[in-house]
Structures are given as structure tokens and as C-alpha cells.
Image (cartoon, rainbow, N blue to C red; front, side, top):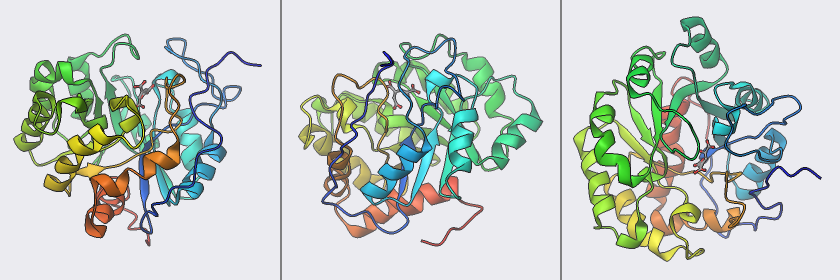
Length: 294
Ligand code: 0GY
């Protein structure tokens, strides 16, 4: 058997919580299949195949309608696996690409036609060798209309990143709220700094996601809920949610996707907050041109 890593469970529980019609899992990935879509020579981890059939089966099991597929770092800047999954989704997936900042206009247009609506800048040193801020700013300035930038960073570099983030001329989506230490509580320094970022401009969204990465105590993720629920309450039109399936690099603490879904009503208690988090906000960012039926 392959020694490539498996970071997901094949037997997630069915959640007790039922998402509203049209709900979007706005942060997930596909891996391969590697015989068709080889991993990058610079990949920092080599996962087993987790292709679109598996993703869409999970989507249905968890009660979601759509996916936003984020290009995983193990595929580098070759977005073919992500585009393949979007093409297989029957209009129910869109995506976020990772591109070489030197990418040409025709390639960007081809990504748009393939369902891509944003690009991701990854600042995690364990995932990427290089995050050239000056070149990122250049490409951010020439994205197709309606696109945004997704940024992945950890809380300890937020202050250093602020001038860069402030200079990005398109809307931002911050992965996993910039990975705050949720053990500090909702008023701890990490979330205070993150709120200051949100308050600095109105076009920053965040993914209220990844209790499994942020709360080592595990389900029901009490520290995560205590820290994140106030953020969702205070910024109801700026939050997204995602499973993060197939949970890259989580092979030592594989989460139960059903338990992750059951966190949603704890961070977004009302039906209105859930609809914004799961339907209205992601549709505005990813399906603005399509106005899909709920
Ligand atoms: C995530 C997290 C991780 C990995 C990637 O692109 C990736 O490989 O995003 C991680 O290891 O923290 O949220 O998808």
C-alpha cells in the first residue's frame, strides 16, 4: 500500500445539525488522483488520493449543496486537479487557485471559465518555500473582475503582514481567522488583533473554520466555540465556513466531519446567522454571476 498519508476518515458520522438548503462548504480540497494529476515536486506532504467523487459523497452525507475547492499546496501552481473537480461538480463547485504571479491574462481567463474566483497566498512556512509579497501584490492588481484573494497565515505574523494585507486592492478572505490561539478566549490578543484587521476595511471575510486545527481538546471544541461565536455574531455578513476536508496534514488527529458540522449551530445559533454563514456570504463571493436556486 502507498506510504502517502491519509488525513481523513472514511466513516464520518452523520451530523445532528442539518444545514440550510443551498449550504456551501467553502473550504475543502482535492488530492489527485495522482496518476492523472501528479503532486508538485515542491510538495511538503504527499497524501493519498482524495478526488472529487469522495468529496461530493461527503458533501451529500453532511447535507451540503456546494463546495469551494481550494487548491492544496501539494499541487503547487498546477490547478488541474482543482479544475477537474469543479468540472465534475455539475455547477456545484467553484474554486480558489494558486498561481505563479507571472501568470498571463489568457491563463487567468481560462481559470475563470473553469470556475475559479480567487487566488490563495499561503504564508505557512511548513507548506511553502516562498511567499513573495511584492509579486503577490502585482498579481492581486490584475485579477479578473469579481475575484478576491484568500490569505493563509498564523496569528504570530499578522502584525508583520498588516502593511501587505492593507495594500491588497481586492477583497480578502482569511483562512481559519488567521489561526488564533482560541485558548486565549474571545478577548485574547490574537482575536483582538484579528478584529482590528476586520475593522480596518469592510471587504475582509473570514472562515470560521478548523476547530480541529485550533482547539486541541477536540470535539465539542469548547474553546473554539467560546472564541469564535462572538466573531460570527459581530461580523455576520463576513464569515464563511468549511470542513477543510481532506484535512491536510491532520493524520495524527483525524477529525470526524460530522462533529465539525455540529459545531455550526454553536458558533451561529440563529437560522439567520446560519443562512448568512453557509449560503448568502459564500454565494456572494463565489456564485455572484450565477444566482443559483437554493
Ligand atoms: C488548510 C490547511 C493546511 C494545508 C493546506 O494547501 C495546503 O496544503 O491548506 C495545513 O496544513 O494547515 O487549511 O487547508
